[in-house]
Image (tube, rainbow, N blue to C red; front, top):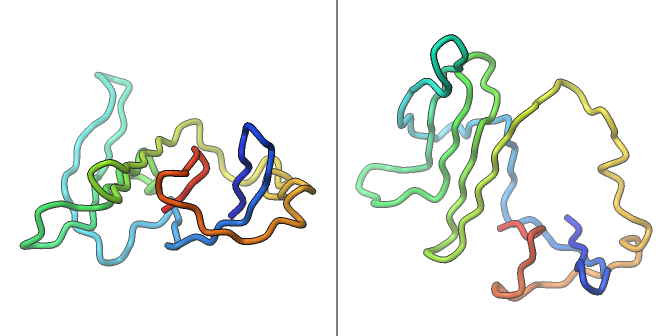
Length: 127
C-alpha cells in the first residue's frame, strides 16, 4: 500500500498487516443481528457479523452486509480504545469503471518501505 503525505507530497510504501476484502465475510465470523435499513417502501435487509467470540468482551471487527447479494454496507475495525476505522459503502456498481485508480503515482516508484509510528498516521493508514 502507498501513503502520500498531503503536506509534503512524499510517497512511501507501507506493508499491510492484514488482508482485507470488503466483499468477503470471514469464515470464522459470528452472526450478530439481521435488520432493515431504511423506511417503508424504501428499505434493504442487512445482516451484521463480527469477530466476537464467546468469553471475549469486545470485537475488533463488525461488518454489515445486505442480505441479498451480500454487498457491504459498513465495516468498523477497532485497534484499541483510541484507534477505530469505519468505512461506509454506497453507490456500488459492478466492475471497475477506471482501473487507473490502482496505478500508484510516478513519485511512488522510488519510494522505500518505512514503518510508521502509531501516532504518525494520516487518513491513508491501514492497520
